[in-house]
Length: 209
Image: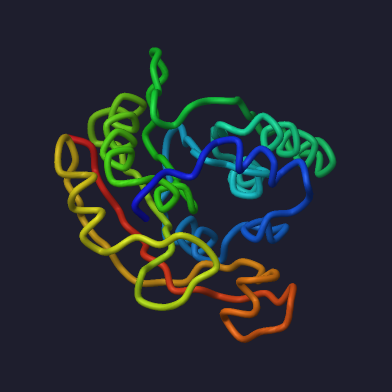
């Protein structure tokens, strides 16, 4: 990804219906991550979209805040939580410019890192540093450049570059990201329109110094 996807693109996507990354459930990779004991303390779900991960974590008893730059996404996340009877919190926030006194021990990024261009990926890591406590962990699930995908992708080296300052990049492994292939994506991937697909993804873990 060589440029950042504009915020307006996401706001329009959420207003029009369900974008390809909205599957009505948390990502299987995130569910497994939680089961492995990867979450603790106050949790920030950054780029929360329609709230599936924050709702899932809140239901399990975590202190979690979901944030997104799209007001339409946050409105839908709040409605989803209310409909499911889950007391999950959501706010509108710019992930590139976190400020204030709130500090988190765990940060989840499911499919946000890969929408940024090179300079903004570095700014994003710097912003997460501001939002987290020393020793905090960020988990990043991002589409990988190793095969055709349903969205923008990043390389393995993009994590090294973005998290070079103030972070220790502890692990980058391969996993999958579930989405829905519509229109051009479906044709490019050779599947029927609206089919659920699992795309290659990176799962990175970085610890704040």
